[in-house]
Image 1: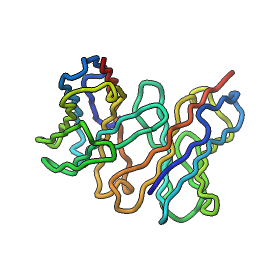
Image 2 (image 1 turned 180 degrees about the vertical axis):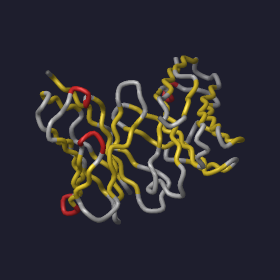
Image 3 (image 1 turned 60 degrees about the vertical axis):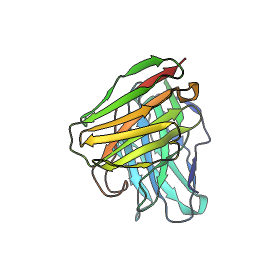
Image 4 (image 1 turned 120 degrees about the vertical axis):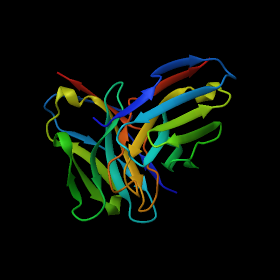
Length: 113
Length: 115
């Protein structure tokens, strides 16, 4: 069965510092991977997605993620965090033809001045 | 922003009462979804719809029913609310045959408290 693990419940970084949020998935076939961001009181917004091809994908707001099949990981990165990046981040996995996404439990990001 | 409106945004109800949440879209998208979000669980799919009067169950459908009589509206009903259904409920819409082809747009959520 598909599953997603986000091992970090809460991360605090200083503004301007680099960021990496971890995501590990469990899936038998080729996974389709997503990162969503949720600002307080808001719905989810898609940051980026990986289906195939180049394992380094670029998303909105300066985020990128790298798919590593050998490690079953799809970590989200940003070189320099802004205060507006404070939010909750969700990794999700789906499969081709499926009509559902399986979400991780989320990582809450706090940005300090 | 995608035209998705969830109503109500907040509701407190008593155990055993029926509750209906509404998701309204102005995008004419074919697919609509109801998720619940709980601490430690992320988002879990309750039910989804792939057209008018066409619905199917998700991974946590027990205690919930849905209806879609018009393209724009997708209703989620708790027939007899229980405290375990206290959660934040999100509606999402999408306009493709698979969830992978296009982005899913999410509503702002409904916070439901069952006391």
